[in-house]
Amino acid sequence: MSITTDPVPSRRAAVLGHPVAHSLSPVLHTAAYRALDLAGWDYGVHDVTEDTLAAFLADVEGDPAQAWAGLSLTMPLKQAVIPLLDHVEPLAEAVGAVNTVLFTAVGGAVTTTGTNTDVHGIVAALREGLGAGARPVAEAVVLGGGATAASALAALAELGCASARVFVRSLDRIGPLRAAVARMGVTPSFEVFDDTATPSALVTADAVVSTTPRYAADTWAKLLTDGDRAPRGVLLDVVYDPRPTALQSAWTALGARAVGGERMLLHQAAEQVRLMTGHVAPLAAMDEALRSALAVPA
Image (cartoon, rainbow, N blue to C red; front, side):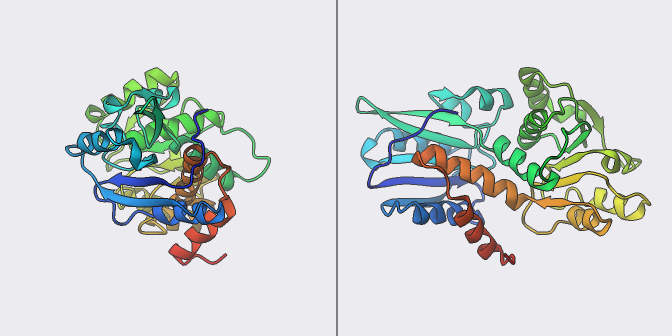
């Protein structure tokens, strides 16, 4: 991603979604602005639905004086925003999910560019879990079939695995994911997870990424707890509320390494800060603010 914005005395940014009040993005971005001495920058929160997204973007684009730098998008807007944008970066287009919108003033008008920093966040979080000098990921599993699953597959491909196993509840509901897979050129297998499943796929994988909503992976946690084998790889559960999740707890109880969704959140936000401000993100300051917000020991 090469688009950056020239820092100016006052800029605005925000996170959009529904619901969104629980978002930790303001904590991360505000900490970055403080560390970068961007005193005139402000990061807000707006509850926006798929039905109200177009009107929100029109208001922003119609008034360049507002000096918007960018937006962070959470569910359910990551796919809905794509047809509303002037440009979409290749990775975001391939994945089929935009979590970042950048604004550029050109000739008195505002143009919008959509990109995806979730892939960056997943890669960075998994690398934390894998540790320095880890070998490429040969076997991987993705739980879930939504937009974040597509980002997870792109991230795993970057880490060396283009043929992960994807477990979903129904093959009838993954049309957008299949389309994303075709655009990305990866070759995962799709398997139905039901009450007859075993945890064997999880325990033999080098990396497992759970992209399911909170509590949806609890059945996998029970399978691990009831089994007799410890996972050999690292788990990234993108959920950070509640934390730890039942799957994380089961994973670590067996002596394996798990990374919480807050690490993905940190790294994707750091990339957003870089794109929106034109500065290298102050990762340490953002990490400290996140740990404080979550009451995590340093």
